[in-house]
Length: 110
Image (cartoon, rainbow, N blue to C red; front, side, top):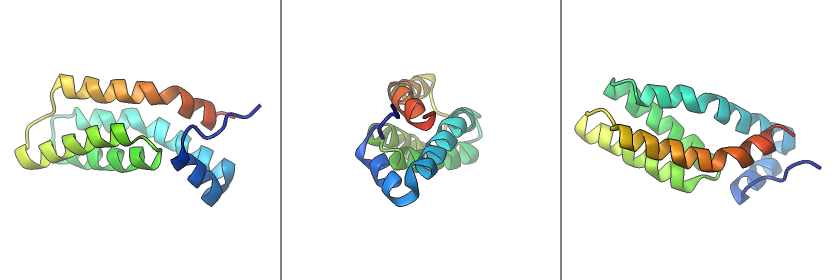
């Protein structure tokens, strides 16, 4: 039995794009997460800020408001201070992603 969309935001994407289109978008998000997180960890404040912005927006589209808020905080911190993110901030983002990853993968792999 196919996995249902794990949240209302993805239900909306299914309505707008069809199940296959929504699954493709979720798969793209899952595939790009580690790449963008590495950019945030890069130490280059400008690259990190752009990556945090992108990941924030895509996390919101995936129906992950808590993760999007964490990324918005990182983006603002990078913009205002220009300092690299801390290991604790990265671990917090990773933990929030890990909590959401399973249902997203189940949905994307049907």
